[in-house]
Length: 87
Image 1 (cartoon, rainbow, N blue to C red):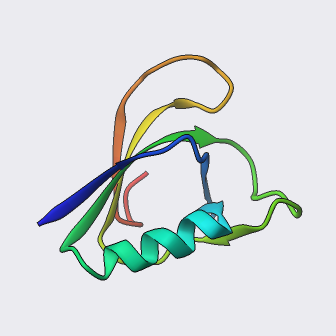
Image 2 (tube, rainbow, N blue to C red):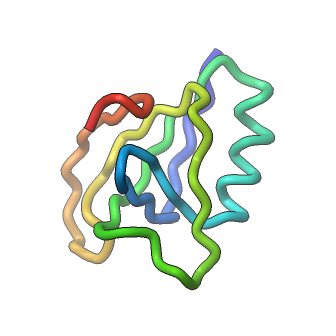
């Protein structure tokens, strides 16, 4: 069974790795251990992870992303991103 999560927590894809706010990533790690997969609907932010704001890489577990727009752009443009190998 997969868990679907909609969040306002922006995610960044940088140098082959997804990043997000550390407390969010830690919480999702707990939930991901209870399910076969995790599907996140989240805004995409650009650039490298900021040095402040506690960024943390997301684990290579079975997380799947449904990007619902660019953070701050006010648009909804779903683009699925599953795993780490697809961008």
